[in-house]
Image 1 (cartoon, one colour):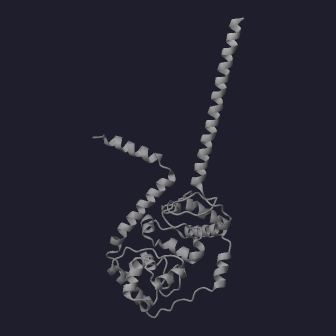
Image 2 (spheres, one colour):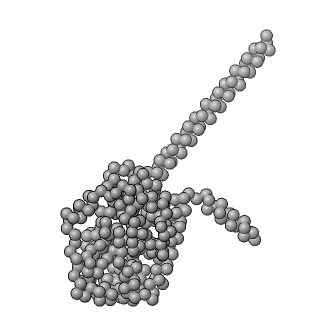
Image 3 (cartoon, one colour):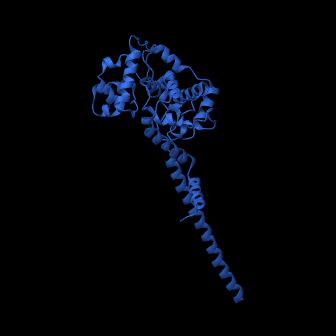
Amino acid sequence: MRDPSQQYNERTRIASTLSPSLRRGIVAALLAAGGLIGSQSAFAQESGQQIFQKACAGCHSIGAGRLVGPDLAGVSDKRSEDWLIKFIRSSEALVKAGDKDAKALFEEFKMHMPDQSLSDDQIRRVLAHIKEKGTGATASKPEPAAAQAAAAAARPDPNQVQLGQDLFEGKVRMARGGPSCNACHDVRNDKVTSGGILAAELSLVFSRMGKQGLQSVIASAPFPAMQVAYNGKDLTEKEIAALVAFLQHVEKEHAQQLPRATGLRMFSAGVGGVIVLLGIFSLAGRRRKNRSVNQDIYDRQIRSE
């Protein structure tokens, strides 16, 4: 049996050989797995309102207008309970199955609602809360298109953008100890270090969600993996504003960025390096051989004299 200290040293040695990006990816994968496993039990004894606040409020309101997703006031009058349970469980599965209502929602909002690991009873509690709170509520009118366009066109403060980039990359730590965004996400920008691929690529997320929607998602962390990663480590208002400004800036510069092909570039550089080294070794060996032969001829001539 191996000594425990030797096993620890071996594990430490192996971990040290992993690249920082790979280590971030492994950690993020473990967090995501833990989130999916633990979310069911976390919601088990909670009320419909509590579940809604944790799992839904980041993307939906009840009578306060559209956010990332639609306003849910009166949703029980528009859809059957059975359909709502299936949609909340997996909207993507309904879209793939050809459900017309699910496909219409996907085409309108340009994204799938994330799957929720909730039981039928928990979903019914959420629907009961929505119905109770939505009774008599009138959904706010969406912001006029001109106002939305003006908000999108407003250039974010450069200092906010820089802070958001530093927070995204982990160069500046979150005030409450939360992980950096690029552990799971990536953006296409030449000035930003490549991030993880375990979650959505965020280069064009600003136009899809809008400023208010992004603020809501970052503040409430509605996805299971985010809930685990940021449990008790909520971002401050300053950090949220900076990340939103950074993502807005990334989208504005998106068309000017060159395609990323880091793996191909590294492979090409490696092949080029090998060719150069082989050429150097070949020349060095040929020169050694030529000098050796010439020296032998010269020595023979001297001796013959």
